[in-house]
Image 1 (tube, rainbow, N blue to C red):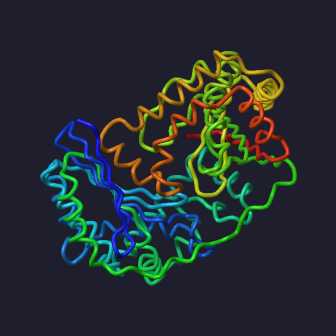
Image 2 (spheres, one colour):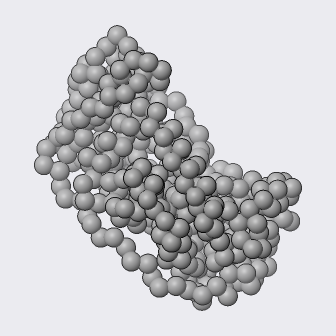
Length: 427
């Protein structure tokens, strides 16, 4: 059956996207809030992630010890995630049980309790999570690079927040953040699956439209100035493996250059999966794999790009071969980038790169949960039409486009190069 889609904005500002997919008796529901680490100031870093944790601590109607059992008993799964620009909650349920998810989300949009004891307990959990991250070389290296690349813009800090802030934020800080951003006019509700569109919309209106709109949240406007030359840094830590990360400025998802750069990413390092919980595909045909891994300068190499509201970073991560120096891998990377800038990319390479980028995009949007994900995710940085036209825009990319964006964005003077220097011991 043909998929049917409707988009409606309720009287309180909640945007609703519904996609009818009759392939299986399943419905996936995603509630997205336009709040993430981009909306945090120093002293409150990590607050969006912490509020996400508190949303699982229950309401009067749905106590914490009931939630997990209720979802599991009905054969469903649920989770949440916080990122730079957004926070999302989802439930994928048998079609005849989805009303539980809708009632739960409508309730905790307004009635989460933020009990003092639960806040204290979750502080311990999140600090422990942060401490665990600090045992990971790539977390330490990535955080140092991010803090260097963004001195002004709030992309400066990691989503989990700085340890000092995690130790000092209060229950009132968390509750104020929740009440400021968890309002219907700052949210998008997206459902895909086996339902009748008019009936589903009526039920959503019944549950959500009575929730009053809130004041439009104030956004932080601190654009990052241009970088004045390459920055190199090193981070020392436990382990035996050396890593190098090279980060270049990457445009926002709505910028026209996002699409040729996505094809360049596919050609250079293998395509990035924009769906954050989708799988990947092999990058063994990419230029950097052949130049670094095949020649035993690196054990692995990957590129990474994200769809964001403001310009972020394109990150190339190299796991250095134990018998080689990081300088050798970096020199080989620079050689490949120079080739890309000076030599015309062949038609065969363009076709293969576009095909791979299209394939990973398709793999990340094929099942019902992924379909519902994309309905709301695209709304966080653009509109759902961005998703619908993505493949067409990739197919329009030419060799001339590739060469232009390579020269414009992959400049040494605008990059940050970080090296993780292992000091021995367990990794």
